[in-house]
Each structure stands twice: as structure tokens, then as C-alpha cells.
Image 1 (spheres, each protein chain N blue to C red):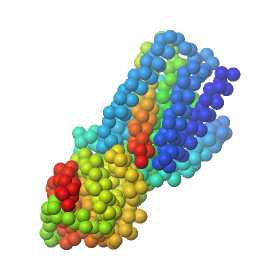
Image 2: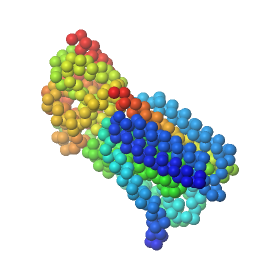
Image 3: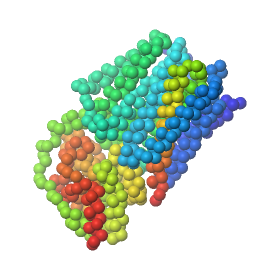
Image 4: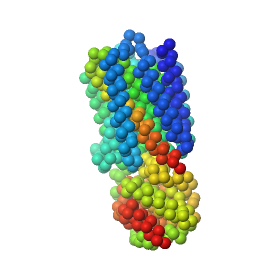
Length: 101
Length: 464
């Protein structure tokens, strides 16, 4: 019990942050017309590619002689980048079609 | 000093994500919004590469930098080419594939960070949570991809799959809790847990029917967001947190919106009964006969109408008939016929998918009318042309409580004066159920491949 309380206490700013971000997410999405749901899903998909930042951090913090970590890290960077670039590019392609008219 | 600059870079990136998503609510600004978010992402990535540092750990050896830039280059090239080349009809597959990549990235981070977290309970929980959610999202997305792709069309249901899935889920939690509680640093246990999470992802998606797939993709999308957010929590990294949570909460909301459109609860999608009980329910009251109509008759009927509403479905896109339907629309408008498109919220394979497919062939989005709005207009409509749609116009959703789609809001095409249904054959729709609309006395069946039939129709109209 005390562990949980101290965890909440040490991370309280983070917890506030998370709660507010959840509401921002709902608020921002709440007004999107259904016409744009597919590009929205794909755009959101690109944004969670931000996980690639984590992959880069792992790479930077890992020991340069730890080949297993370097390999896994490189694969993670490739996959994360794929998620980011592919997501944004395909969303752009979709939205470009809406813009023509 | 450098640390502060990085924090500011992350702050800017976080703001661009929020603004970007916000701008996507307006068709005119949406593209700009997407670009803004992309710029923010670039700032966050470049900032991390050059400015991130953790005392005693971070180093920028040549080999690491080469691998990071090499990885980014490879990911960019593959992602860019795939995104540029993919057909718009394949969009749901692509989104689930990219989503799986993000999930895999989160899972790999978890695998690598595990050994650093030994001895700190809360850190280990964060690491394993990100790893498990990422893995489930990855394997689930791959299965979703295969299902959408047609490689795995039929839902595969083990006997009592609900119970098995629930047991596996709890076993996975228990296993993870055991690993955390034991404080072990065993790689074997870690990889076993990883394998178990992947296995659960497969079990989770495999019994779900094709019609529910968009909901699943949207749900997995928010899972990956959550996995990214756990990464943010782990590194105390605000941009990962903002991005991850935004997508997590937005994805969850989108999932709920989709479920509502189909009048299905999320629970029934995951533990659902689609297909398994359907076979017994229908077939009982299919009475009456169907009526054929020739191309000339359709042309005459439309030519002398005042108002025509087109109901497009995924079949239209499969037949690649988006362009010809736009040509039909322009031709009719030229002759003073008012033409609108009635878009059901789940038309296509994802919500809003049909809008994208039509926009691709230059249809004005002002002409795409949402269900609630168009439903009141059907009474004043002379001709409804249903192309490649089936379940979204099935009256069983209103009248037959035993139908699996009972309760789903539908387009009230029956109120129109004439209904013309273009279909290749009399086979049932995506949900696999009989459609009584086809037996309605006002309905005429215009058989043929959508593209060929519409091309013939346009040619016929031009001679009038």
C-alpha cells in the first residue's frame, strides 16, 4: 500500500499530465466529421510512431559492444521510422484528394 | 543547457501533435495539420539523436550513429515507397501494417530495457507493460492484415474460444506479475513472456469476423499508442507520452464511434457472435421474387428523374468503379438531375473509407451526405442506385430481431420511389446475410460487374 502511495506521490506530475492528455485527445478528436475518420486513423497511427524516439534512446544508451542490443535497436528504429514516415505520407496522399475540390 | 533545448524541442513537437490532430477536423486544413504533426515529429527525432543524454550512459560512437541513421534511412525509404504505391482500397491493410510496425518497435524497446529495470519494481512494470501491449498490437495487426488481405478470410474459432482467450489473457497477466514479483533477470522468462504476448495477440484477433475488422484495427491503434505512452513514462519523455496518450485516447474514442455506427458494443465485437448464429436465423422468410432491369431501362429512369441518390459500397471500390460513377454523376447533373451520395458510417472497410475512395476520383465532398441527413431525403428521391453495398441497406437491421445486424442504423432506401441495385450475383454481403430489400416490389436488380455495368449505363445515357 505504501509503495503504491509513494509511487503516486513521486509521479504525481506525470499522472496529472496523463489525465489531462487523455482529455485533450478526446476533445481534439470529438469534432472530427466521419468523412475524415480514415485519414484521422492513419494520422494518429503516424503519431504513435513517436515510439521511435524510445528506440533511438535505447540505442544511444546501450553499450557499443553489445551487439544483440545494437541489432534489436536498429530493427526497432527501422520499424518505428516505417510507422512514422509511412503513416504521414499515406495520410498526406489521402488528404490531398480532399483538397482538390 | 543542451538538455533544455531538447525539452523545448519536445514541447514544440507535443504542441504540433495536438494542433495537427485538431486541424484534421476540417477537410480544408486537414492536410496542413498532418504536415505540421510531421514537422513536429522530425524535430523530436532529430532532437533526440543529437541532444539526448543520460549521465554515464549515453555515448555517440560512430557505429551507433551509423546504425541509427541507416535504420532511419531504410525505414523512410520503405515507408515512403509503400505509402506512395498502395491503392486506396488497400488502406485498411496498410494502416494495420504500419500499426503493427509501431507495436513491434515498442515490444523491442521493452525487450532491451528489461535487464536495466531489474531491481526496480515500478520500472519493470512499465517496461513489461509496454512490451506486452506492443507485442499484442504487433501480432494482432499482422492477423488483421492477413484477414483484410483475404489470406485468412474466415474467422477461425476454437471451440469455447471466449473462455480460452480469457484464460490466456489472465495467464499472461499472472505470468507478467510473476516475473515482476520474482525480480528475475532471466532472459528465458522474458522471451517466454514475449512469445506468450504474441500468441495472445493472435488469439485475440483470429475469431473476429471480417465486418468487425475496422473496429479491431482502431483498437489496436490505440494499443500501440498506449505502448508508446509506457515508453514515455519509462524515459520520462514528454513527447512520447503526449503522442502515445493522444493516440490512445483518440483511438479509443474512434473505436467507440465505430461500434456505435454498427450498433455493436465493443464487448460483442471481441467476444462476438457474428456469423455463428446467423446461418440459423435467415432463410426462413425470404419470399417473393426478384426483378431484373436492363441497362436501357435504368438509363431512361435516371434521365427523367429529378433526384438521384447513389449508395456506394465497398463492392464499388473492388470493381474500381469510382471514376465511372463520378462520370455518371456529372452526366446526370448536366441534364438537371440532382445527384448525391449517401455514405453510411461504415461504408467501405473503415469509417470514412468510402469518402476517401470517392474523393480519389474527384467527387466533391459536399455531395457526400451522411446517413442521418440523407435518410430524411429518401422520400423525395426518385431513384436510388445501390452499387456494391448490401448490409448497410438491409431492412433486416430494422425488422428482424434474429438478424445479426439487427439494430444497426441503415440507409432508408426503401422510402425512395425506385431502387436499383447493382450486384454481380445474388450472393450475400460481407456479413453473410440475406437481404430482403432485393425482394421489395420497388427494387430492380441491375446485375453485372459494377464497372462494366456503369460504363454501359453511361454510354446508354449519352445516346439520349
